[in-house]
Amino acid sequence: MAVIEINVLGTSFALKADEELPYLEKIHEYFKNVCDEIQKNDGIQDQKKTAVLAGILIADELFKEKQKALEAKDAAKNQDIDPLAELEADRLTRSMIEKIDKALS
Image (cartoon, rainbow, N blue to C red; front, side, top):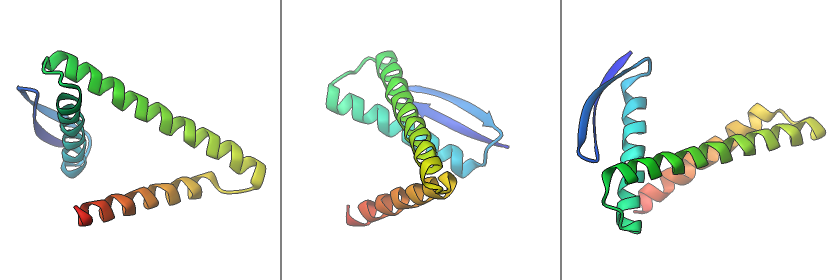
C-alpha cells in the first residue's frame, strides 16, 4: 500500500491505494501528460473540461485495448496460440518502442 500526492490541473490531494508507489507515480504522470496534451493541442484551459476529456480519452484507450485482447483471444482459439503469450509479446514490444522513443528524444 502506498500514498502519493496528486497535483493535477491545480488540484492537490493525497491518494492511498493498494498499489506500489512506482506504479502510482506512472499512473499520475500518464494522467498529467494526457491533460497537458489536451491543453496544448486543443487549447482547452477549463480544468474540469480537461479532466473530463482526459478521462474519456483514457477510457477510449482502455476499451480499444480490451477489444484487441478479445480479438487476439478469439484468433488464438482458431490458431491454437496462447493468447496470454501473444498479449505479453505485444506488451513487451510496446515497452521496447517506448524506451527507444525516449532514448531518441
